[in-house]
Image 1 (cartoon, one colour):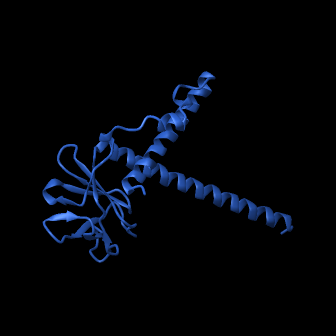
Image 2 (cartoon, one colour):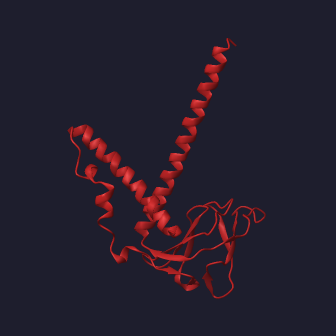
Image 3 (cartoon, helix red, strand yellow):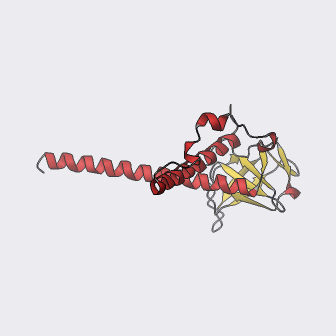
Length: 186
């Protein structure tokens, strides 16, 4: 079973691959022949696995002194930013309904460290009355800021794709309804 970070990494990879594929098709349209990137197959990609350093080590806990701020990446992930390039991604075991990027986290720690299964709430900056339900942290995985940026971009691309898909479906549905109304002579 793939870990949550591996799933997010694959999602980021898919978004990057889609972007490369679009760029390759644009290059093909301009030049009339495919570029080298466009001809890579899945077998070629899988035949060249990543080196061991590409795989992150999971940690159950993170000392509070190791991070300076917490970024809400979405309702499934948090990024704990340390000094310099240090970032620890925490993929939540379950979606945290209502968690938004503009919220402040109130974490209930059981020790001096922040650990998997510690509970938290997202609190609205404007009003302490508005908060999420109680959510739990997952394990921590160290990564570079660059990798976090790619994952963040992939999540935005995925959200945009969902929005476009919903819009197209709604338009098709409205078109079908309009056709049915027109056929009835109403």
